Image (cartoon, rainbow, N blue to C red):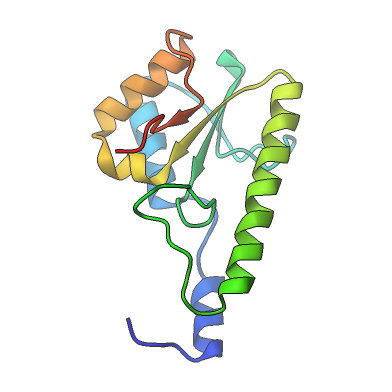
Length: 149
């Protein structure tokens, strides 16, 4: 990719949305097709979780591998330009994620993190089966993938 002028890069990055991302839509559409009903981006909960399933007292957070610094993932790499800024930003993101997860769990919510790479590496059917098993408490995973491919 060609180098972008700082203003161009800033404009590009400002257009990246945090809601209705492709990975989030894959999870949402799969859950809906499987008969699960949910609320979106509940502002009354810490971090406005992506998917809230009140019936199961459960939350699903769909994390982008870059923005949430998915360690060991082939889809995450630190940018080569402005490295110090990105390292600090991603560390702050990870700290915020950990703080919000703890607040949600302390409030009695079960939480599952679905990483962007899982929406690419697994079929929607397999991904929804794993989420459904978690919702029914058949498995005690905390993130998908629970192992890196």
